[in-house]
Length: 213
Image 1: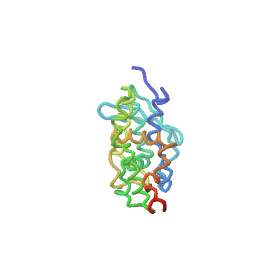
Image 2 (image 1 turned 90 degrees about the horizontal axis):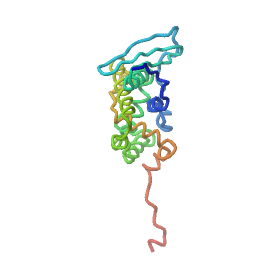
Image 3 (image 1 turned 60 degrees about the horizontal axis):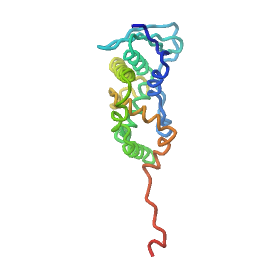
Image 4 (image 1 turned 90 degrees about the vertical axis):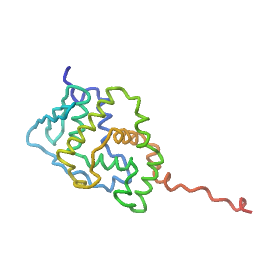
């Protein structure tokens, strides 16, 4: 099988890269950035592997990872591994959000922001419905997503999370359901994603004086 780089089939690779983005304009704005060295003196290459997956990760200037793998699952594995090394806290924070667990881990938040977020996301059902909504993906996409999750978790087990969430109890392995739910949340960025607070705080209209007379 020919070697595949992460620039191949940009659409599929972008699916996994987008999954790692933070799109929460209200909650993540107050979250510290992950802390990771930003420069390297020379390129370094490592091979990371677990049963079923193996990827070569070369980091060049500024720590930019370049992934080489022999199959789509391993390509996703390498991407997930590198992202977990760099910004595990970002993705884990977003997964807590789409699960509707912010208040459980972080308290009610200022102005009950976390409670409102949890109510809205549970109402939207992004996590509860993730497997059903993404159940008809191509085999290639499923392989990449499963590989990404395996890579993310492998790096998390080997190194822990770097930065502001290091050592926190909510730093835990993720699942394909988590990743698909986060992908679904990103698709709502320009629609329901802007209505989280209104969804949680909506009230029925008050009767007019004529209705009560």
